[in-house]
Image (tube, rainbow, N blue to C red; front, side, top):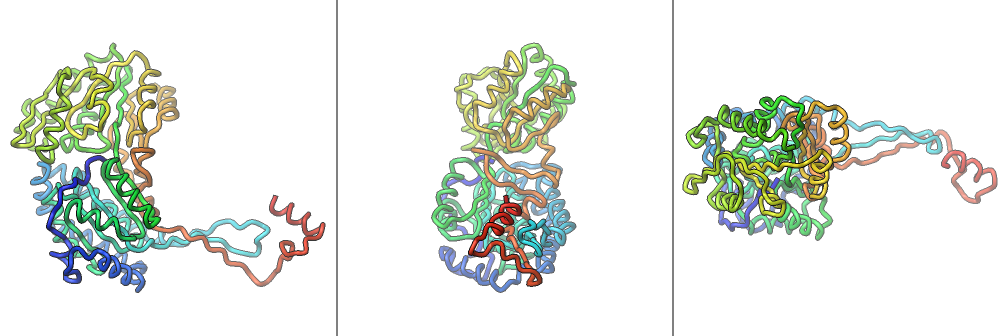
Length: 481
């Protein structure tokens, strides 16, 4: 999901300030030992504990909606509506879904048993992993930090939560509120930067869950290898958006503008570039401009609904992408206020930085391609993206695109809407990530599916025992082969 955790050291530690059990902020080994002791007490395994924590989580969001919204505004300029839809409300829905289905999720699932093992019963029994580490991201600093925590709690785990240090206000409110509402013996918040993250990654947690960029993802993987810790990585990539010629350009443009410029483009699944034929270019660009101005006005800088880039360093990074490019709309940048306008670029060099790196901002390159096949080839020559989008009314083209284009997630005729469906897993493939979560998939990510077979003493099948007679071999081959 790109750029989640920077390497800026920090002297603040959420556990030092907000959890009386831990007065030595750098003693992360003792911190983990405490969580493991509590997990070993089996307190977190009961359905009643899990439900009580999820209920408390929901109360946290309801009681502090205004304060959380203000923190998100201070960090990213998020308006109340966007903060609710993409962060607070998203988490509420996540919690309610988990509460509704938790009893079913935690039940053992009966499986079939082969004839050779009869009489017997077979099950898959979900059990919590233990103590997990969740490293959040700054672009959706509430949702991407706490949604994995909801899944971890539903699965019965203890957790250390490390919010992004870049979203300083949201990090602070997470560190303040979680110990007030949740079980402090099971959930601990650690604030800070590179030093704190490195120290946590050195500990033998039972699971690492990281949301961020590929570079730090590799660091997490290396750390996990030291203790053979399982890892879920939610990363990012350059999500393509392919525009066919047979569509309603106005509707498509409105949906793309919503998906791209929400959160000022700082969304890991936002369209990163558009591929289109020359014949559709002018009409589509006109529709895009119209949609931008309809949603964000002629002066987005004064528009309450248009957010800000997280900091000046990222503004400068985005400004660098515009050097030498053909900007056909927007392009205004104000470093002092971290403002970058909605910007359209036409036909950048495929080898330029803006076409090689995840943009993670409100810049949208539009690339003219000669054919549908050239578009597919262009996408498939690059690492698999976290999301891919196609706008078309051609059913055969849709089927071909789904079959031929690799991506973590895909949406036809809209952008990012799959995130609202709890029944769908969310995750990357290849360099865009590994593992998945949301809904039952999040519960599974933080659980171990333990296989259990129970056999009876009623009948003893001795075909498997030596010495192996011709008859035994015949029977074994019949049952097993």
